[in-house]
Length: 76
Image (tube, rainbow, N blue to C red; front, side, top):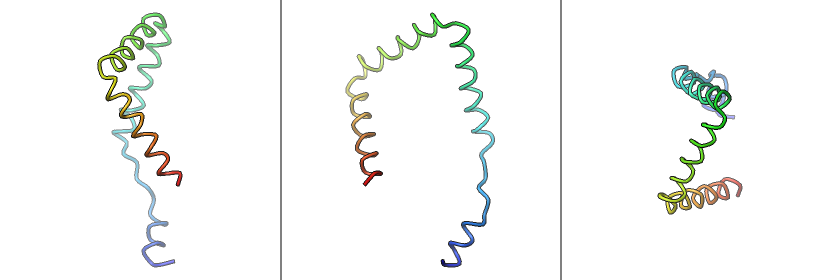
């Protein structure tokens, strides 16, 4: 191994705590709300899904295709 490879292996990875805490907080908040209000949560998710698929259908399909192509590229 080269000297740079050894140095990169020894350096500890830093954690962006602000981003981590905000992300976990949002996920926990949404999870608690969906647990407490399942009917209303189901309706809200249904409305969001309908908006994405009916009004932005071409973007939805496009992102799906791009994602599949990206994953195929990663796999090969």
